Amino acid sequence: MTRNRYLLGNFAPVTEEVTAYDLPVTGRIPAHLDGRYLRNGPNPIGIEDPTAHIWTLGAGMVHGVRIRDGRAEWYRNRWVRSGMVADRLDEPRRGTPIDERMDISPNVQIAGIDGRTYALIEGGIRPYELTYELDTVGPCALGATSEGYSANAHSLFDPHAGELHSLAFLYGSEYVQHIVMDAAGTVRRTTTVHVPGNPYMHDFALTERFVLLYDSPVVFSPAHLATGVPYTWDERRAARVGVMPREGGAVRWFELEPHLVGHTLNAHERRENELVIDVVRHPPGISLRDIGASRPTLDRWTIDLAAETVKEERLDDRIQEFPRLNPLYSGRPYRYGYTAAVELYAPPAGPDDDRPDEGFSNALLKHDLRRGAVEAHEFGRDAAVSEGVFVTAESPKAEDDGYVMAYVFNPSRGATDLVILAAQDFGGEPIARIHLPVRVPLGLHGNWVSGAP
Image (cartoon, rainbow, N blue to C red):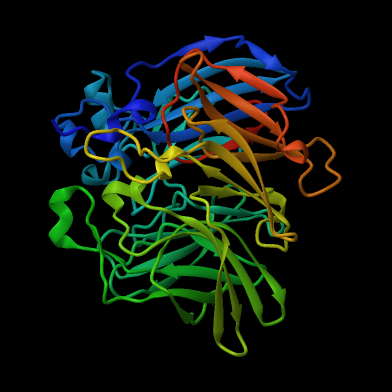
């Protein structure tokens, strides 16, 4: 019998929404932390054909922990109620979608913007607004433009300029749009860029002066629409990185070895004509239907704008994804980055086993890019770890003065902990483990959202 690994183990969806108060804690939560740790991810509801299930298409479910005064006040998990999800739950629909065909439950990212909470996806599918307690308000117009684009899952806030940037694509369109919003999410300007071939452009990067666009051999394919993921690897197509002024204008393209960028760690300007871009790079042939079979690594590109050259180098060979950094250093020179080495990105399972035989330990990694050193906090074979989010200390004295938070499955309890690591003692014992009453399935992206409602 064919088994779908994205419905097994720590991928397996949960079937109930839970609310729990006064969560038990091992260790000590820093008293100054006041906010919510939120994470989104696919959690399918009503699977009709398990053998055909594609992990990334599951309905979005947000998991959140409210922290205040050294206590974990509550945990909640809630489906993002698109029309389909509301119908499956036999509930009234929330809000009115712009296009019923694109009314999809956002499952990629969760963000707090100007006191409001948004679940985000991509491809022109509208974000959904949620309440502080994670209940669904309905689809919204965050970042919406007259051409049908809207805020993308990897919208990027520049704390220095007070701007929210998004690089949005539409399924089947050869144009992407760079959308610049203010800190409240109001669109201030847009730039439309022609990118022939409909490449999958999931992420992008910013520096002080430039927007960086990633073109790849993964392209939209109408012939693959029936598979649920209408993208395929085109061996005839090159990979490129584009450099565009933040105010708009012509894009300068630089060709690279074939790959797909998973996510950006950071980018910055090292000299007047030199850009440094650190990315998680997926190797040639990647399939978006089976993303977990890939072996992504942390790579660096150095672009010399004057010489019109790109130097490509490997920073770390270990399989890893979900790069994060201290957000105060976004788009600026920096030293530290954090990634997750998670079983999602272990080699594919054999025909008679759900998991590979070779050794693997789930871990969070701290990269010291100045020294070229990597420090790992290992959690073990069965302790599946999610993306680690950096949260600054109350009065930070250094770039790594803060905490890294992540959901980590605790095999001994059969449930998940929210683990808080001291970034400056990365390999040491967690300063706190908040014990959730349930398992949080492997998911995608999250954020620390400070403040009360």
